[in-house]
Amino acid sequence: MSQNSRPKFEATRPDPRALAAGVIERVLDDAAYAAAALSSTIERHPQLDDRARALLTELVYTTLRTRQSLESELLKHAARGLPKDTTFLSHLLVAAVQILYLDHRRAPVAVDVAVAQISALRGPGLAGFANALLRRVVSGQSSFDRADALRQNIPAWLRERIEQAVGHAEAEALLGIDSAASGRHPVTLRVRPGRPLPDWVAQAKVGRFSPLARQVTSQGDPRRLAGYTEGDFVIQEEGAQLIALAVAAKPGEHILDACAGRGQKASLLAEQVAPNGAVCATDLHPRKLQALDDELARLGLSGVTTSAVDWSRGAGGITELFDAALVDAPCTGTGTLRRRPEIALRLEPGDPRRMGELAIAILRNVAPRVRLGGRVVYAVCSVLPEEAEQVVAAVADLLRPAPFELPEVLRAFGPGACAGRLLPGRHGTDGYFLANFQRR
Image (cartoon, rainbow, N blue to C red; front, side, top):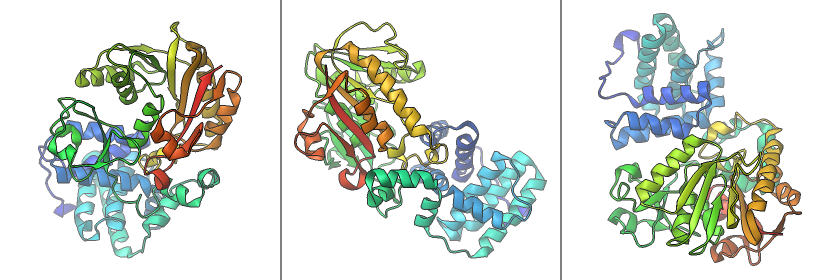
C-alpha cells in the first residue's frame, strides 16, 4: 500500500477502479447522469471484458448509493478535513467503497490504484495524504450496514415525502434499501413482434405485465450480443414499456409523443400504428432527437417525424390534430432512485411542485392538439403527488379522466382504473404515475 508498491497500469488495460473514479468525478463536477457517463466510459474502452465492466458498474453505483457514509468515514480519519478537489475525492470514494462495502480482501489493490492515480493527476503530496488516509480506513475495522448507508444517502425530507406517497415498504424498494432491490437488477428488453429472437433472448424470463418484456441476467451488455445490431430487440424497462402500451395505439392512427427523449416509446408506438399510421415525436433537446433518429434507423422503422418543441411554451408550429398523445413529462425522477442514486442529493424540497407545474403547462399545450374525444396518457417516473394527482386535478377543464383501455394496465391498477402508480414491490418495475384522459 506504499507509494513504492504502486502497480504499473497498461494503457491498453485500464483499471476499472480508475475508470469508476472518472465517472464519479463527472457526476460530482458536471451533474452528469451516472448511467450516461458510465455508458460513454465503457464505449471508449472496448478492451474491457465482461468481468471488468461488471466491476466498473458495481463500483460506480455502490459509491453513489453510499456516498454520504463513505465521506463520513473518510472525514473521521482526516483531522484537517478533505481537500475540495473532486478528482482527489472521487478516487478516495472508489477506494473506500471497495474497502468498506465490497471486497475487503482486495483493499490493498484498491488503495494502490487510488494512490497511483492521485499521484499522476495531483502529485506526490496529495498521493501521500491519500495513502495514509486510506490505510487508516483499512485498519479502522468499522462495521457498516449497507441498508443504513443507503438510508443515510437520501435526504430526510425526500424519504418522508416518498413514504407518505407509497408507504414504508414501497419507499424502501424505491430507494434500493430492501434486500431484493439492493442487488443487481436484471436488464429488461422489449422484443419486437415478427422479429427473430436470439436464443439468449428466447430463453429469458417473460415480464409480469408487458407481453413484450423479457428479463435477462448475467449476459453482459446486450448491445454487444446477437440481435442488437439487427434491431431484434430494444433495451427498455418494463414500466416504460407499459406506459407506451397504455396509449392503446391502433394501426392507422396518428400519435403524438410529446416528450419523446431518445425514442424507446416512440419506436413502440410506431410499431403499433404501422403500416399506415404515423408518429410525431417531439422533444425540447435536439440531441435527444438525433439519438431517436439513430434508434429508428437501427430498428428499420419509418413513419416517425421528429421536431424540437418546448411544449411548456406552446405547440412549436405543430398544427395537426392527433388521435392520441403521450406526455411522458420531465419530473424529479423519484421513481428511479434505485437505478439513479445521484438524483437524491440534487433534489430540493421545492422541486416536486416546480416539476408538477411544468407538467401542467405541457399538458395544457398538448391537449388542444388532440381531437375531441381523443386519448391522452400522462406519465412521470415519480411517485410524488405534486407530479401526480395534483397535475390531474389542474387539467380537469381540458381533460376528462377515462379508464385505461389496455388489459395489462387494468390488471396492474384494477378494473376501471383511470390512474395509478407502478411500484417495484407490487409490480417489479421502477416507480411511475400514469393517468389516462379523454380530450373534452
